[in-house]
Image 1 (cartoon, rainbow over the protein chains, first blue to last red):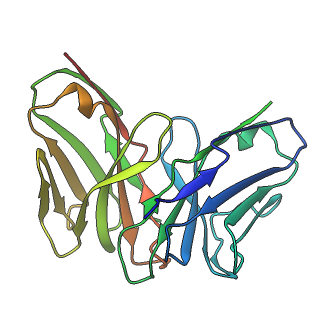
Image 2 (image 1 turned 90 degrees about the vertical axis):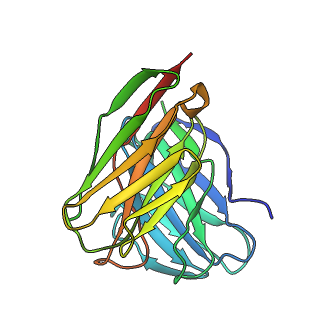
Length: 114
Length: 114
């Protein structure tokens, strides 16, 4: 059973461009979380999605950021008009179902904004 | 608002030493507490998960304790090895907010030298 996959692993964008980060959860997992890790900081929750639904986006910046988890395909975190402050590692984690405890983390996407 | 603090921020020790990493949290209303390991450029690996009703968990050379009333957890690493070098993150799952989202500390960067 392959683990959580994220791509790309590294992404470089210039200010004003769009960044798309993809997350494929573990097989059979229908719950996805996105976290952001700024340099020298811990991970901060951004958004929690189930298939075709955003359940909790309380950690997501109100502008420029959006997330989706379609019925088919990976979850996508989209950042429009990136700024230097968006440079961070973005991790996704998947959960089999909401009553379990263990979130399985992907390797992360490291976004650098020039 | 739940906050998680880890002390020390960094630690450098010779091989063979026994280590204690500390984690404190401000709100004792948690479902569980987890310790993760993060290697540079990689994702997170769950080391130990302690349910709120438990006092400790052990895995090999690792032992984690939880004192929920005082808002503290410690991760004990016995007979440290260079392969233990990594960042160790503590995270809690709070009652409030729901949805299993994790609140992380900033981590302790551990370096074990031969």
